[in-house]
Image 1: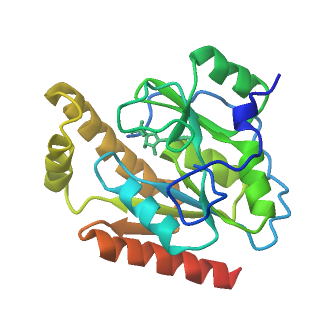
Image 2 (image 1 turned 90 degrees about the horizontal axis):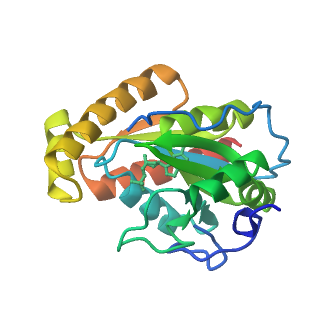
Amino acid sequence: MPDPRLQPQPSPHHGSDPNSGRGVGDETVSAPELRRLETDTDNGMLLIISGPSGAGKTTITRGVERSIADSVFSVSATTRAKTAADVEGVDYHFVSDEEFERSRENDEFLESAGVYGKKYGTPRGWVVEQLKRGRLVILEIDVQGAMQVKLQIPEAFGIFVLPPSEEELLSRLRARKREDESQIQKRFAAAKREIECARTSGIYNLFIMNQEIQTAIREAVDAVAAARLRG
Ligand code: 5GP
């Protein structure tokens, strides 16, 4: 039985559309045969936003979502634990390892990856349906996932968010007070690997340095608008 939470359906999010849903990982969860996806997307567009923890990609993602009227955020499934700040169905669908594996076996993910020992996956059916409706579909996913998506949907537009400097990244990771110092050092090392991997991957159309958040959001929104006009 496919997991109903991963099937096409409207789901709530903090975005402008009331019908919208919402480190280099250590392992690739799935290696499905990745074919070009025929989505008949009309004027729908897929936007991938990646970047290391602490670069500010979530704030940029939310800013883009608020600024573009027909944008929708894709709510991923994850096996990571829900934190006090997370809302089920808005930030993620929190699932057990068994549920995740069942969805993966049923080919319900457009991409999936292991990040910091936990599994994350993008709901294929929901994304395809939103693209068919002509929406701007935003995926906030890591580089491994972005590579899988680009193989299937080469016209996806990729933005990678960079911190202003390594020193700034380290101090932002510390300021979040989410992890202890050894975890912070792991995230910092993963962030440096992820930036290197993103630069050499050739999958990102734009690298945005997040020096000032409103400027970074404006850069992202302008780039998306221009890409959409080009078609
Ligand atoms: P967090 O657990 O801190 O929300 O996210 C950890 C990392 O997983 C972030 O880099 C985030 O972009 C990435 N991520 C979140 N959802 C997905 C997904 O569905 N697929 C992939 N490949 N990465 C994801």
